[in-house]
Image 1 (cartoon, helix red, strand yellow):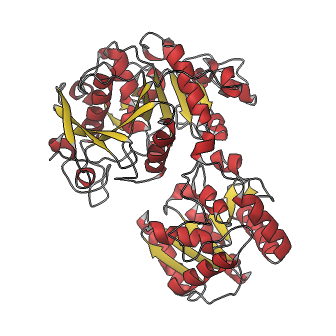
Image 2 (image 1 turned 45 degrees about the vertical axis):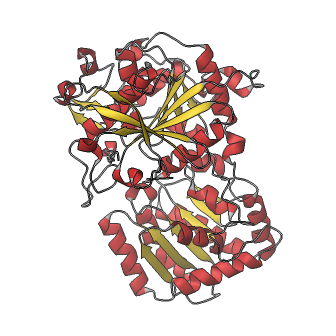
Length: 534
């Protein structure tokens, strides 16, 4: 039986200087015009005529069927499933232990040699119950261990993450070149985030002319390693160039994906604009501006899985709809009892989030006393930075009956909290897309969020939720007070809930921009790229 493994991204904000122009001129770029962010104008126009089913290789470090750390796992499970209605899609995933333990009927379809310090591997294939085909990179030395895809049991990054994910990327590039998968060869490769970002680079260095797409889910995680790793990864000398993957004296996997992929997408239109600025660009705004100039950067808002339907979700205590609220009230009662809250006294605010600085948890802690004094109650589920976990538990200790906290995550509990709460708190400092606000809207919980990234694209202030702009406790509290005022006006609250429940896009609706982009890339296959100059 094959093996498995994991690895975790490096937070680029700890390693990045604010300015990095890349030496490219981007004069004349107008980021306010949405057309600039669309690689091909035809993406916004009537779709192309149907073609034969093209083969797509979807490369990822997470797949929520088996292993999930964040939104990438949900994205990787949902998008390929809707894409396979039009394309022949295979997902390529590291063979982590937790993956192999859940695989049935896994068969070996090929083997690939090592390179430099990257060990050889086998390629396994498993077909899931719904027909989705998943190929696994089987390398016991790299993937046979406990922990998450990125970290050990103590929360430390695996020291060989660069080798672990280079193995994934090199396997993808070899498969794109027609090796290792019994002749199955994709017509397009779609890589995701830093763990698979070396894929377009290896393809280019191997002379593979297959078009590649690279999706940035979070620019702050860049997969940084020392320059000395160049030899271990079998990289050519050009990798050390500032125009390739060198980044302030280190190597950046993420930058390699940006430099060598034929096209870049992000997970919302606003985030695509934001990452071209020094504030949000994590030191890569220069090369991203260059991609805008070359019309090679697009923003496509994520959809959500069709399972998020309050009228038939089996996770809920009781189902409900916009015309029948009794089930929502039943979920509220469950949350109150489960978290020891005093029943029926004031609006119920929810935090369903990783407890990290990016998510603005410190801002929620700062306004919590005012929120509670105004009659609100608070429930939180999630884990993250130890200091924030401790602060949330202390808040619950100081306010029994008003605050309930669970450190950890459980899918069923999270869904019941979305269904039972009145408002979801999302004061994120930045948010590439965000899924929690979409889940909350589906279940009639109005998001209160900072106007950034995908939150700005998916929430209409005063209609489907509440937005605030300044990264301050006062701006946040003002939005919370607006929400409390709406809570005390039942007709307005129900009207907003109904609007919110009709707002989210499911993947079955939002997949078409990807289909059109795939078709365009397949028709316009270019020679293998050489860094950002071409």
